Image (tube, rainbow, N blue to C red; front, side, top):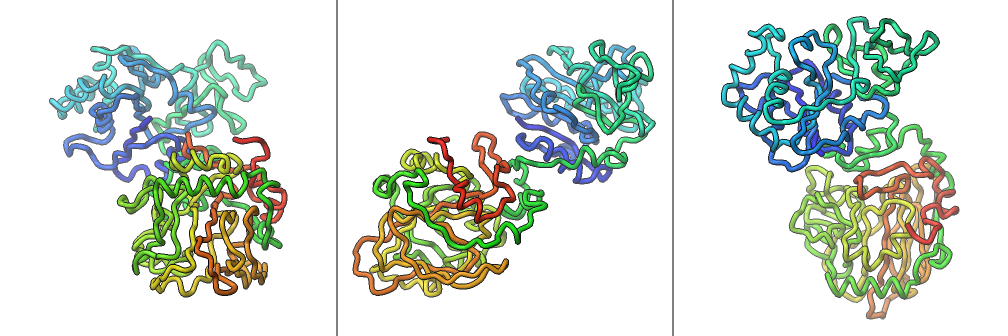
Length: 533
């Protein structure tokens, strides 16, 4: 569902956009920041939504409101074509004039309301002044909710949210007034102290549990100026919806980090004694290497291999295909099956720590690791027995082939020592499927937290390996390799502290969030211990 909101001028800052998008991250916001027609004034720009060619309902909201308790029920309130849902405006004196809605919240099918848009656009100045001249409201700009209500009644069924769901801000900033419903057992001992026959107050730092929308009106109509505003604005986020970061400049993992996704974590403790670990596929409950290899070769037969791409061209030795993809990837000409195989904007083959080449921004580039969160159907069909065992989100991942005997003039491969993201960002599992003993991993150095390791090791088929990718490492050969078969590994990237929900397109803090990396690995918490997910 789409939500349309108006923020024109400087009365309300961008923090109001942030507030609403954080509260409603699963919805797609349409922000009107400039009049859609130069003749249309301020809140009258709400009419824009009635001209959208959309077959599903949209919500239109004011931004000077607080969303509290189970507020999503208001946005999910069901309507049928031919119905128009609004927030009741029961506090207005104009109730005596026959009006009963407030303009702070609408929900409707845009195609149902096209006639209202056309009516308004046919005589914009007339309607923007009509209700002021009739004395129903005061100027200089006002009256859109009355125009909407009158127009809705011409053809549509007008319905409202329950009175008990909404309240308004009163002139006294210590008190929030609302209607007392019959089923509210309010008494003198309640925190919702009765002050008249029809009203209750906000006490004890909470709103009555029925309330979902608090609309700021009259004397104080900037929520952030209220002394208790922070109590309702400081959302302890557990879900990080990708849609919330569509206007961000930085990669997705950095947006999540900036949004508090890693707040209060002691990274020195998290990384304590984290070095190198190996497991058999059997003890992890994963399919055999032969089984996985068979499926990898089936995928290869259908989509082929791509060499690693840089500005210097495409590699002949290092090839493969992607296990995950990003639907917003910057290069639309690249197949979803090969997005994680570099790009012509890169000047080197390995990690971001060695430079980002010709990229003007990293969002939706190869370096945006969490953006590669979706699994192509072909890949999932062949490797779902592997993916179903993962207890974290799959992010930028690949099947990697290394052809030792292929001649490769690509200079970017000559120095392969590098480091990758911190493991608490991306935890990598390396699974050899086809190899010979000449192929080795070399690890030598120290990470920023003082973990040291020096190791030359052949990675064996039938095992899975995890190591501290912030310690410098490279793949190499211990001696001349005479095998004509390529070395084939799966390189799985996991969103260590987060699970990924593909239906909601969001990352959710998981059970190991903030825990020590060594403990996570040794306890096999990266693996789903059931039969499948």
